[in-house]
Every structure is written in structure tokens, then in C-alpha cells.
Image (tube, rainbow, N blue to C red):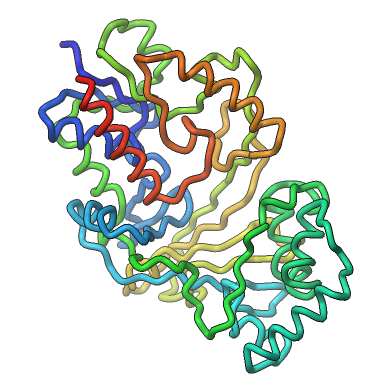
Length: 368
């Protein structure tokens, strides 16, 4: 059988694309080198808890069409992301809001908080930030930087903040209300039952083969489909012919605990430099779970190397220039659609992935 599309990657982009094509009567073969569908959205039940196996995923968007689109596949709960930060035992609310400022300085009004931040900005005496540290000091002053930004960021990126570009936090939000909701988006929640059933519903109607590597498959099965949708790493597609793009990776340690409630919140960030992990996720709180046991995951940033799982693109000048060269090569391939965070070498929120996949499927359907 010759399919209309070979879709490489059974994550969110690939699943949305496949659903749209099959809904229009097209045919799709979806392959993924992992042994299960879902990509980094994959959730697995452990001790009665739906565990986010590749880090916390909270769906949020301002786009009602995308919100309604996702709700075709699951009922979403009313979870609101309100993480807290632990700095050497001191607890602070995130994102930076009046609760944070009160915990940090004892201030009670927006005027008092703004005055404290302005004073610390002035003390920093920086007019043209040259790196992330200087940018943070310009935006929030020394106290918030030292306790809530520096250690976490250095762990996440594996280097001193003075070695990181300023643009990473150029739009650091400050909220002068007592509001711990991390996102400003109108719609927010988590699918009841986890993300895996959502992706499985999207893939209904497609042929799906898991544990299949694209390079080997395409070599052994030439001409399997009229066109290809590729959601893997763009440099890998071209056999790293121009060089290797850089990423940061993650390592997860998950354990089932014989306690009903371990930390009282879904996400606790550890912002000191000494704690080796960046956060602990307690998964049952995503779905307001009950029961005698809980499941927690410690998330460790890790250096990336070929063969490891790439999570965060390092969008510095060198990598951006290299990606642009690969993008030019991709533009010459009329038979291949590149998409997703790895195909585009970009970090996307989930709603943006859905939107891009819908647009790609609409464009592709018009050509078939």
C-alpha cells in the first residue's frame, strides 16, 4: 500500500496532522522509534496516578478554537498551574507576584513592591545588559535574582548566568497582584485520564508502527508514501551534514511513595544551585487525586550528546545560524514537511504545536 503521508513521530504534531488527514479521507502511516505513542506527552498510570513521564505538561491557550479542538479528545479538568519555589527551605510563590514580594520583603502593596524593585535596579547600575545575569538584575534586582533565578537557571543550562545571553529572560513577567496562576491564558487544564488516550484517539484511522527507526525504515521501504511529515531533529534528517545542533537534556527519577500527599503542590522548583534537581513533580495533584499513595518525579537537567533525548534547543547565535542552513535545505525538499519542536528547532507550548500542525495539514490537504 502506498500511503498519502508517512508521519515520522507519534507525538502531538504528528498525531494532530494524522487526525486531520484521515478525517479528510487520506491515508497515513505513523512511525516512532519509541515503543509507545505520545512523544513527550506520554502519561502512564502508576499506583492509580497518571504520571507525566517526560515532565509536567499543562495545556493552556488563549485560542478558543484550539481549546475546543483539544476537547474533542478528552474532558479537561480545571487545574491551574501555581508552582512554588524552595530556596534553601524558604518558600516563595511563582510566578513573581505580590505573594512573592511579600514573602521576600514583607511588602503589602504594589507601590511598596515597585519601590523595592526600582531601588535594587538602581543599585545594580546596569544600563546595557550584556548577559542573563545583568538582564535579570535590571529587571528584578538582586534579591529575586539571587534566590529565584540564578541557581535554577544555571542548573537548567549547565553554565554560569554570565555566560548566557540576555534575551533568554528579556520579558521576565512581574505581576503586581496577589495571583499565583502561572499562565495568563484564558483556558487551562489537564485531560482527565492523562495525555496518552488523547494521542491514541488522534491516531485512530492511521496505521501506527512503534519501535521503528526512520532511517532504517526509509532505507528498507522506499516509496512507502507520497509525502513525509518529519518531526524528528532536522539535523539528524540530513545526517548532520552541516554540523550538530545543540540541546539540553533531562533525566527523571520517579518513585511511588506510601504517603497520601508528599509536598502539597504539583510542582516545587528548587532554585538553589546545590540541589541537583530543578524541581519535584507530584503527579496526583494534576488531577486532584486521592488515595493512600503518591508518585513523585525529580527532574535533573543534563548535558546532551548524540543519542540522548533532546529537550531544549540552545538557541544561541551559533545554533541559530546552523539551523537556518538546515532550514534552507529543508525548503528544497518539496516532498517533506518538517514540524514540531525538533523539526523547527524551537521550544513550543502545546497549543502552538497544535496550531502549526493544523495549518500544515490544511496546506498539505490542499495539495493532494
